[in-house]
Length: 215
Image (cartoon, rainbow, N blue to C red; front, side, top):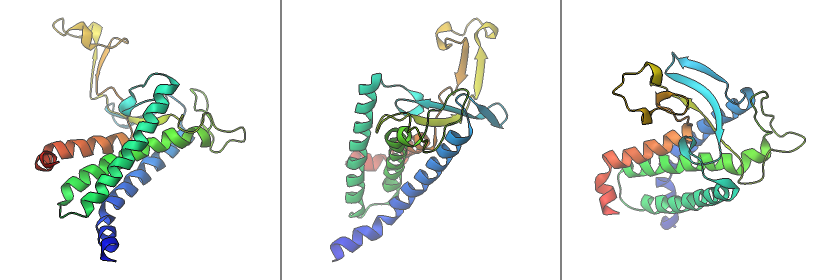
């Protein structure tokens, strides 16, 4: 009996982390999807914190994975990775271990699940978002894609530093500028799930090196 009760008590903390990350991630994505068109944006704090609606077919921070088979492979890999992380997290809760590693791994798991939900279900429950129209929830004509072929919703944009190539000092190399002639730091658009994954990984690397070495 104690074999089952003990892990359940200890798993409450990672479950709470995963739950709240997913809650805020999905609430924000639903809001963006149902109220904004692709490319629409508004400033939150000046020119350096912008909500900018975009979608991607691939990995975190808008990176792409080639083709439909690539996307399907990535979705399946994410699901298998989440299952593996979940099992490992469960095993950790059965050991006498500090909360730090559990926090980091829980954040990574929550972020991975958040983007899996987009890929798995958004194509079936939403109509397509375009530059001219807002998506509909559960449209009569059906969704825009099949299971595991949905697009991931991104919205956080932090252009902290913007340099125009034609106005920049000559000593700055041309290769750092994009095709649009601008260098933008930070250019990728991301979501809460991406931020959770990054937070978890950085936390483990900075504060849990002893744990990582013991793995």
